Amino acid sequence: MRYLLNLVRRQKAGEAAGIYSVCSAHPLVIEAAMEVALAAGQPVLIEATSNQVNQDGGYTGMTPSAFRDFVHGIADRAGLPRERVLLGGDHLGPNAWQDRPADDAMARAEVLIEQYVLAGFRKIHLDCSMSCAGDPVPLPDAIVARRAARLCAVAENAWNSAGGEAPVYIVGTEVPVPGGAHEDLEALAVTTPQAAATTSAVHRAAFAEAGLQAAWPRVIGLVVQPGVEFDHHKVIDYRPEQASALSRFIESEPTLVYEAHSTDYQVRDSLAALVRDHFAILKVGPGLTFALRETLWALADIEEEMLDGRPGSDFKNVVLETMRAEPGYWLKYYGDPVRARFDQQFSLSDRIRYYWPHPAIQRAQSLMLDYLERHAPPLTLLSQYLPAQYEAVREGRLRNRPADLLKEGVARVLRQYMDACTTGAATRELETC
Image (cartoon, rainbow, N blue to C red):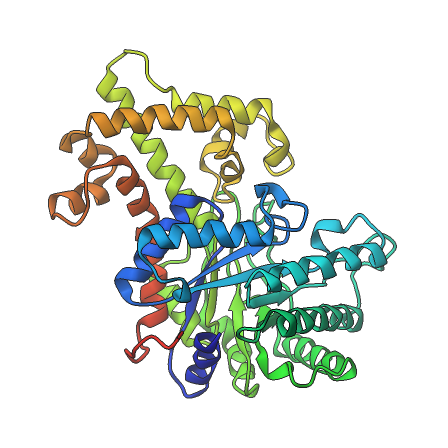
């Protein structure tokens, strides 16, 4: 975690240095992230959420150690040294067990934290902001902080047992709903400096009360709302002037920068402005799988054109029929039945990402990609459906193979984040090891 601790020091020295966090379990997204990091000579930060990966498997079916092995396997294949792969846990707390009484949920959260740290995750977001069964709504700041300190003590004990680098911590919670807003948005309230100060102060006090003063300097990030978000079909862009007071506040905190969630779909200049304004950790997830879906859809169109009426994978229809038959991941998000099929495909919240591992979809995807592997798409169709990839193929930067075309769709987004996190920052040798 020396890289992240040094990132904070660089920010405090006036350098516009940042890092982006890839919040996805899709193997092609992670592989693209590894390749972008390798090409740039930078580390890559991969994070799993408490719903996605936990001691019960989460919705990916992976425990923390299994997710670690999954990510390390991709790094090995990509040629990225494991020491340049930073592993983080996002929203670690009782989030997955909110329907249970607080004592039960927190006991499960302790197991969660312990397993993450023992598995080698060292960037830990302590998020106890959610109310459990029987809790007041909203949960008072003091209770949130005490519960976070309780989980920090578990993490410290696990680290002392496992050895290795000491964990670094993120506190606070995002205002945006994870994965994007459920409803149409017009504007957002930026976190006030007073609210940020309260979050910092109550957590610092709770850490001291729990005897965790030694861990507090490793609390490097505070999650706030800088005024960025997306709903189903539009993006609320970062407005630096609206966050100027919030940006100035963190300059008085010697060990803290901001972590910005839901930065998906921000333009390159906005991402760079966020980093400049001390939102040094940029979280991105749905924006990457949205780019992956765009490329898959384009490849499906290319396959259909090449087959010219002959039977093929029918990839798009297989995906959409699977979603219609199993609506659990999208139904409460896409409330308009007339627009449901459109939203399933094109919503920026990208609920389709939960369906990629489905066996029927995997079979159809394999059929499509196998066909395009055997019959390379003609340049004319690449130009029509994947113009950015066409340009890269023509310039010799990209192979005309389906897996490479898919990863390039994701990598184009990732390179915007890489540029934002390194533009304005002094070029220096990697300091992760």
